[in-house]
Image 1: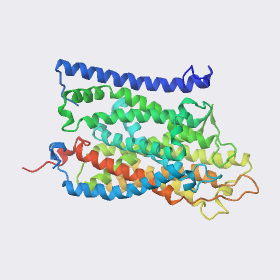
Image 2 (image 1 turned 90 degrees about the vertical axis):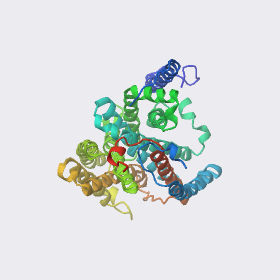
Image 3 (image 1 turned 60 degrees about the horizontal axis):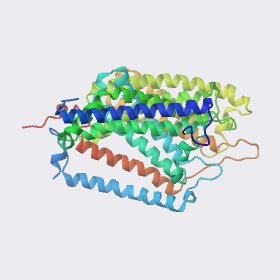
Image 4 (image 1 turned 60 degrees about the vertical axis):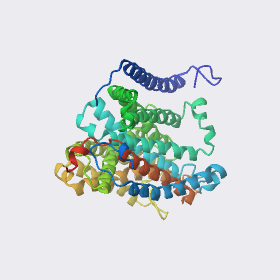
Length: 52
Length: 413
């Protein structure tokens, strides 16, 4: 799963499989983090948005 | 008693009625939980799986709910990426149904692996030559996406929405939902496809084996296609059932019609591809392996040619024809019939590609291997259905799931 795992091999299979997984996890993680941080910032500033 | 939690401007049944409903479904759920505990404590000897059936009822249920949950990714894709704005009125429900389907799939997998404490092995000790590794990766990540899509709806509960942080978080998640929807579509394309790829690469099982392009057998594309076609049908069907139970109109007809029309064209084009695939497989692929078509449909008490006709004609061509014809699609009975047939069709397809594949003898001295699930397998397969009903009941009662509900059901006075 990670390059320091003893089973890791730098081949196309590992790069594609794990690259795809980490790409998706990063998009989700960064997206959620952005929303949480912005929500904290907006709340501290007293902004409240009518949505949606 | 719980009126402070119920969305403003809508009517809900009395709490006692709601609690009674939960208790009845909960009793069946507890039966499933009991069977689940038996499987976890005593092991897979509680099932009727054997050397012929490493994949059985659970894997069929898994593949079926994943296909039916495809309504979430495809409706999300249409709403946020393609930009069909009307679908905002049904996307919440599609997400809830998808969430239920995918969490159920993971629960069933947790039973099927026999030793769930080692479930993380598939990530850490990944076999990068396995279609199922891709399925595990994409399925888990997509479930994360579904959670992210479900959270804003939870935060819109009347009381939670009063908390400024939750209100802002919900708003921010909505703002970038297109990113999550696109990621979900990417992940779904691959795990739906890889589930189909599993039977397609079984070169020693000529009933499932298919040629393809690069590493992907044709079943890879057919599975994704059928999920995109039948997932929205399931979403519409559950919406119609919810309307029937609540005795309310919850989504306007034009929204249903848009989704049904798109699902219809997806189903029609899928059927063309599926029929071409079936003809090529029956006339070229299977004979090249030493089998003719009727070998797969004779000399056994269950799997006759009827199953192929049922899947392709009754549950394929018929619903597709209804859904792409405006007059038939506009008829409520026609629409409901098409939805039911499409849902049965995709479940039947998964049954055939999982269980019939394993039933068919592949060596001259073998016989058909038929299988009957144990009560524990049946109870644990019904368990996610009950869980789904309960989650829908709770979500409908306490969350603003249907944006058009107030407008369609104004409260007098």
